[in-house]
Amino acid sequence: MNSETSPTPETPESCPVSTSRRGFLAAAGLGTAAIAGGLALSNGGAAVLSRVFGHRGLPQLPPRTQPNITAEVLITRVASYDDDARLVDTISRGLVELGLDLDRVRGATILLKPNLVEPSTAAPQINTHPRFIRAVAEAFRKFDAGEVLVAEGQGHCRDTDYVLEQSGLKAILDEDGIEFIDLNHDDIFVARNPMGATNLPELFLPATLKRADFIVSLPKMKTHHWAGVTLSMKNMFGVMPGLCYGWPKNVLHYQGIMQSILDINATVRPHLAIVDGIVGMDGDGPIMGNPKPAGLITMGFDLPAVDATCARLMEIDPNRVWYLAQADGRLGATAENRIHQRGETIADSKQRFELVDHPSMKVFRD
Picture 1 (cartoon, rainbow, N blue to C red):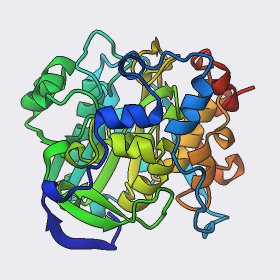
Picture 2: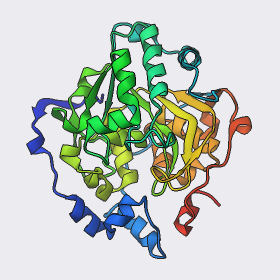
Picture 3: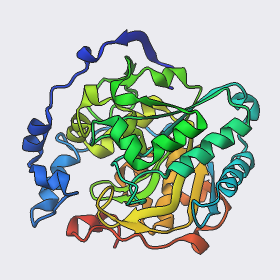
Picture 4: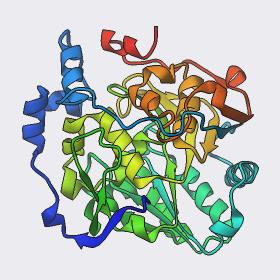
C-alpha cells in the first residue's frame, strides 16, 4: 500500500457515491443495453467512447520521476489448467527466477486479487481460472507465507456468493481453506491520490489492503472494448468498493477508465502481477469476447512492464494504450528497451488478439 494513507477508517456511508448507475449511463450517453451487451458500437461509438474515457479530457500528470527505470518480466508456456502440480511448479520457479524475496514472504499475509467478473464456468475466458488462483496460492504457501487471502470486488453481479459458486472458485477455496473477502463490502479507509489523473483527491479503499503485506494482481489476458487491453493494472479496478463507487464502478468510469487505472495503481501500488494467459480473451472483451488459447503465463514485479509485455504478446502496441504510455517512468517501465525479458521471447510467443471491429479501435493498432 501507498504509505501516505489515513489511519482513520471511514464508514461506507461517507463514500462519495454521487453518480447512480442510471445517472452515469445518462451522462455518458449510454443505454442499458450497450453496457449489458458488452458495447454495441454504432456510428456514433467514437463520441460515446470519448465521453466514457473521461468527462474532463486528458489530465496534466506529474513529471516522469523515473525515466530510466528498468524491469524484468518472465514469460512461460503452459498449455492447460489440468496439471495442478505443473502450474504450481511453473509459478514457483518463475517467482524464484525473478528474485522474489523469500524472507519477506515467510510469515507474510499475501492478498491475491483475481479478475472475477461474471458467474460462469462455461466461458473460461472471462474470469481468472480457479485452478490458476489455487496454484498461485499454493506457490506462496510453499514459500511459507503466513496467510493467503483471495479478495475481489467484482463490478457487475452484486451477489458475491453466486459469482463465487458459479465461477467454480468457491469449491477451490473451500477445499484449500482459503479465505475470500468481498472488497465491495469491506470496511473503508481513505488514501491520498498521488497521481491526480482523475479529479478525485482521495480514494476510498477496502481495509483488507492494509492487512496485506503483499498484493498480487492475477488478471486474465484480455482485450477491452474501451481500454484496449485489460491486464494487471486494469484488474486493480476490482479493489475499489462498490458501496463507494457503484456498479460497475460507475464513478470511476465517469472519471475516465484510463485515468482511474493510473490513480488506483499509484495509490495502492500492488507488488506483483501474474497474468493468466493460458486461455485469454479477444474480440469484444472484457466479457463478450472469444476464448483465445494463448498458453502463456506472464509475471513480474513491475505491473506496467508486465502489461506492456502482454500487450506486445497480443500484438497491440502499448505506446498506443494511453494509460500504459503514461505509466512509463511514473509507475514502472513500458519501453521495450528497458524491459529485460526472461523465459520465452515475445517474438516466439506473440499471437494476434483481435479487437472489436470498430473504427475507434484503430487507435490501438494499424
